[in-house]
Length: 307
Image (cartoon, rainbow, N blue to C red; front, side, top):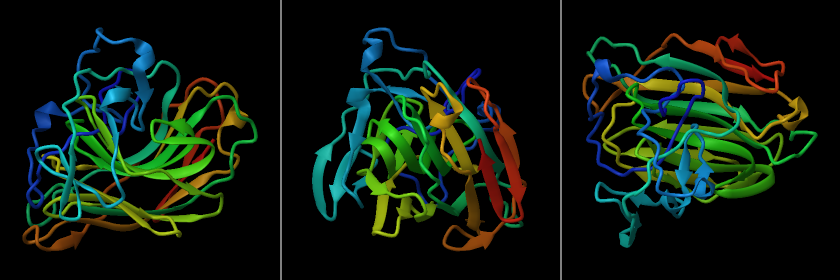
């Protein structure tokens, strides 16, 4: 996530290649909980040109890119659809900025344990959840709910995101799903927003083989985003709630959200194989304004987010 002082973050764009479970892992460069390592705020662009991505950072609108479902972003920032090179994503010229109002509210996370083969980063995180009831009041709020993976360095985040409100991916006063990859450099890439309804069951995966796939099955089809980051994803989030521009508690979802763990894997004897792990999950409630009934109920195989 992106570095924060009083706000947390989770996701933005970049495209670099990761060999099977490759990347760097410098414990000395770890970010704080719920954050992405953030570059210094840019001053050359109007603040109105920055939009709120899932994860906490506001990114310049020119640095947010929608790609087709199933598209692959390679190490040169080229977007491929099948065997066709569709376009090149320009390097972001603007440093990201923190949110102006609200932010991370609560999350449940776990640092990857070191397994018997010496690996200590995640290869796969599978989480199911049910779309909650919509807020009973609308007033310009933007709600993000998601599981995800990121490195403790806070360089980037991969996440299948449920949103309510209007985000850089589109939307309105209804629920929608999109896959996001956000980096601390201030770029973000996402798949097209797919409308979903309260009661729909979402089956999501973040998978790290020789490349990285962030996907979800929303019951109306399967949607994937493939990217190639250089990071080792050793920080897992079985669930997180972000809220922006919320003024009253009835602008939050009307029912709680339960995130249920399916698969949690690390590399096995090699990264061609996988081994199931059971990390220690920690629930963090940051709260905020307005002060609502925020809490997380720990479950044997997940967590319920209350608000």
